Image (cartoon, rainbow over all chains, first blue to last red; front, side):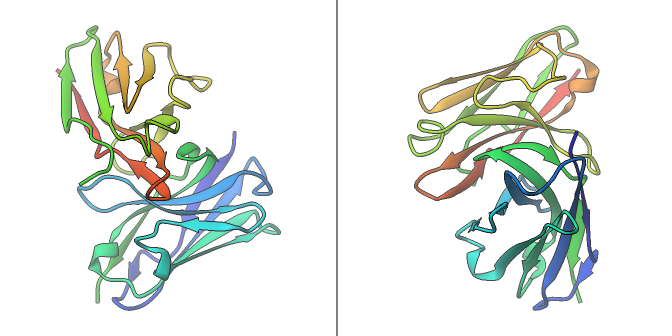
Length: 117
Length: 111
């Protein structure tokens, strides 16, 4: 059973870059899509984007200008960078494996990231 | 406002059958698979309940049933149990928006 775990700073200042890493165990990231999803406090889920094992990416158009993702196959990790953050980016960030579009079979526990000075 | 529309809340008593709806359009549910997720209290990972409209992953009880018709989908939970109390989300790919879209979530209360 593949397991995912998010890690990174829990507090980011406005205008800075939010960076998270997702470590995958029990399976290799050299297949499938690897996604980031977030949930602002009191709100629903929002898909940020995904990276295919080949390195190709696809992002939510509303966030595309600020998002980058990458793979590190040597560490079996993938990462998220979200630039120029504001308080509206405060959320629990989840990483997940996406077997088919919108079909996430494994999720991380989530990492709360607060944007505040 | 979510692209997929779900009722914000649903409830039932133990043993009852509850249905949660998910309404979309031709660009999402109408042309792509629908998936359902259960999200227990904060700090837990969401769990896939129904995959590709009506497929139950290994380990998901057959009390959970997914269906799709046209631009709508439904999740039915029979034999309701207290541990089913959670938030439920539907999700699909949207061809027009070119992204994954989620429903706003339905909070299920077991009375």
